[in-house]
Image (tube, rainbow, N blue to C red; front, side, top):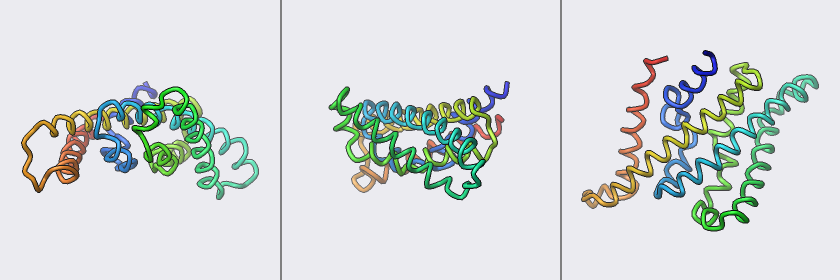
Length: 190
């Protein structure tokens, strides 16, 4: 039951993007097309899951025993940056079109506060390794859900008649706000 609460809570109730407002940069930047949104979601899923697993192990088997807890943020950023570099290399070889479509937003996963935030929150919430992995995967799924929903809405908005002053970023921000309000409606569930 605890894993169910972690997963549902992370995807819907405490969605990392729409209720905690972490990871907004790629959320707004990459959500112009559905295909790139799915690709970014997959990259975030991979990086977030592996980063949380590696940072949990480093925290509990290296930093804590050696009394180096103050190095947590720096070490976590280095782990995340290494994983993002690995994802970039893999995407460049496997899917050059997706690599091009993600552009500058792929390296921004390194500084995506959602990835670092989930790694730190896993430690702060005192999850064991399996709970931490479930938490990371659920947050990545929540991120993907939010970015794919937002991309679908933005693609639909491109076909609609929107007043000239509201086209582009303004209407995207209004829609993101409404989407965030909709997800905040789930907070009464858990």
